[in-house]
Image (cartoon, rainbow, N blue to C red; front, side, top):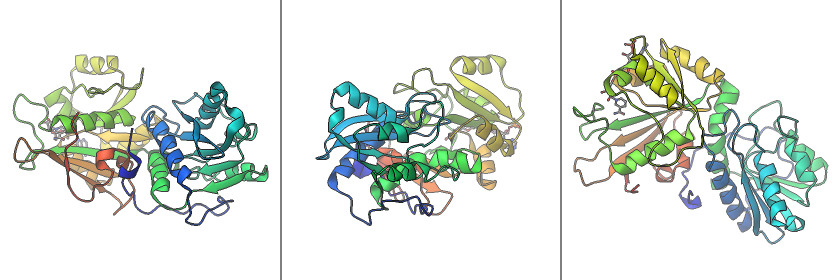
Length: 367
Ligand SMILES: NC(=O)c1ccc[n+]([C@@H]2O[C@H](COP(=O)([O-])OP(=O)(O)OC[C@H]3O[C@@H](n4cnc5c(N)ncnc54)[C@H](OP(=O)(O)O)[C@@H]3O)[C@@H](O)[C@H]2O)c1
């Protein structure tokens, strides 16, 4: 679980569109809202990397005193939305009658999709007050869920700027990228040795610490695609799977390989058998359309210096995590996060050890 107070400031947040905030609360947020939103955020984080093309969303239901009665997260596309999950758990607990407040990281939907509108499910419950973390990124539906609830007489509040709001925005950034630009959020991960080199010594595939390796695998679990180059495949034959922690059951991810060199057929077949939807692209320019069409919300680049240079030069990146090996073998690696937009928000802030980074911080968490 991510400790609430370690989450990184994720920079300026765009204002809600006019009309979205029927019950804006200027500055004041009651204490129970913090605990409730932290629980809702953690419920969403549990399925981060499993929901595409839907966004990760979490929800908590509270009683009139602010005690949490039930929590739910959206597990995957086609499964109930977070609000429906929390309401279902509430019913299972036998405490439905006590429900008064519902806190959700993303504005509830007001349209019939594969599941019914969440607004109607909320209106059918005893909930009288709804707190919304951030607006729906889709301009055609934003504000509709909040308006429906307010019109039905519920008190609807949206979070003011601050840590809770930033958490909710960080959760939705990859989906917002996909919904508005039709391309995923692209995170570059780069490991450097103590001399700033990217090439592991002969016979090795990595030179970072066990803690950094664990971080990298958590990132793989949270993302929907890995982007690499033929150079990395040919030199390392990397498995690129989630290890060191359990993956989402049955999860398939896109593996996008840039470059025209021939690759061993047995490697490509084995990658497909490991759960990858393997795609080859002749140049980085083809990545946005390919990944967007595949419903990839968040892509992670794990490539050598040649492809990283191309992506940086063409602006095909949104943030970069750099893991630098310390000169002394016993010292923790150093981590730094850079964003393409100066001081811009980043979903990397959802990872506890990256939450409070300014420039470079020691990575001391052990796996
Ligand atoms: N430290 C780290 O974080 C890290 C991560 C991954 C890999 N590595 C290391 O990096 C080394 C491999 O480096 P690398 O630079 O050769 O590998 P790479 O960047 O993964 O792949 C290079 C290939 O990508 C294709 N490519 C790159 N830019 C392109 C462009 N603009 N248009 C078309 N194709 C483009 C080219 O493929 P074609 O030539 O086939 O057209 C190029 O040869 C290995 O030793 C590996 O261990 C290090």
